[in-house]
Length: 503
Ligand code: SF4
Ligand code: SF4
Image 1 (cartoon, helix red, strand yellow):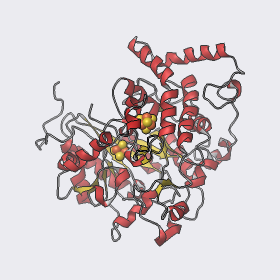
Image 2 (tube, protein in one colour):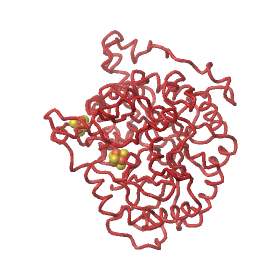
Image 3 (cartoon, helix red, strand yellow):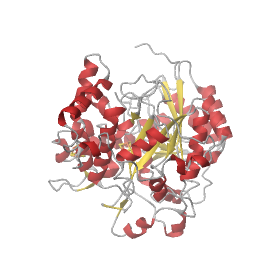
Image 4 (cartoon, rainbow, N blue to C red):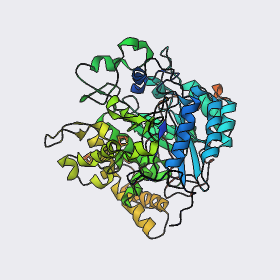
């Protein structure tokens, strides 16, 4: 294939990946709120005397090296935290200037930023819009669910302030992606949470992330108190160790039930309209492409950059033993090509338990993320994924519909045609038979036409506090051209977890 981008000033190392998805943390783990489940807050302890603000020299080194390291025509510049908007908009204007300075001919740059939304104002939105940022907004569902763990330093819920930020993004026409954690508070409300995002927030991009906070017998009690400021000096430094989980963590099987609950709603109404990251990447996996590191056979393409230039193997492994080096001393491309990083990624495949190797959905699941592999397998082997029962449930349950979508695509048809097939099956089965989601309820009162209304606050509870004063119709939004529900443009455009570029 003809190389469309200009030559890199660096000769590529043979072990360097052609592209990767780096998460840059310009404020380190510093945040302006104190979500109880956010163990990233404890990472401040890694740099006790640091200001946790990326300097101009580090910013320039990072942007230059990132662009030099890529041999793919597309480069994603992804900002994460902590809370990146604490850096103020001028920092990001400078980043865009530097991207223009170092971008090679033909290199296309995508900008993404993950935020809690509290500092979003008109200036931010104008900037996002001008540079076509995809903004990830963290929302855990309706107010009662969101405010359970997403609290400020006084322990007050942040829902109203997040909705204010959301309304501004909407008013300025900024593309946004909802990032929702699945935790002990919302795990039973998959369909209701999803409907809230779709119907009340007008979300076209939704991403679910399971909360799994590990702990040991020694750290569990303290970990259960949370990682926020109020725990203060007692707060333990979080590492991926221990085979216990905090009380806020999602239940293993419950994670699968949550996803199935969302899927049963989405597969009847929203294919081609709403992009749910895990559903889209699962369909891609049927074609042998793994767009999400978590369910790819190997990983190691999603490093995390701290504000001082330190590079870690992955955002989930910001720990001294996974420090690859510092970009002021070693070029980013060399750090990505290092045996340590290659080994980190391959270890994912090489440590699969026998249970995983023999599992029917292994080609889709690939054992999940190594950070969650800390329980015993059915054979008693260590290193089984804590979420295994939920993952197995999700991949098994969705297989018939996914296979039909694969067939439709192979025949040149749209996968959304599966909605009519499922509707026909629903009609044949009848409304009073058990719902196919497995809840045990009758279909009509579960995923049918009499699905229960949300027991949580509706938009009237907060739209008066938003600046545009109203909820968005789910009919508005961007046209779609993705294989499933991606809005126009690049359907692999998402935040948080890391796309895998080995294909
Ligand atoms: S699979 Fe897990 S450990 Fe590997 S890059 Fe992705 S998040 Fe990190
Ligand atoms: S579903 Fe469970 S056993 Fe199967 S590959 Fe995933 S983690 Fe392994």
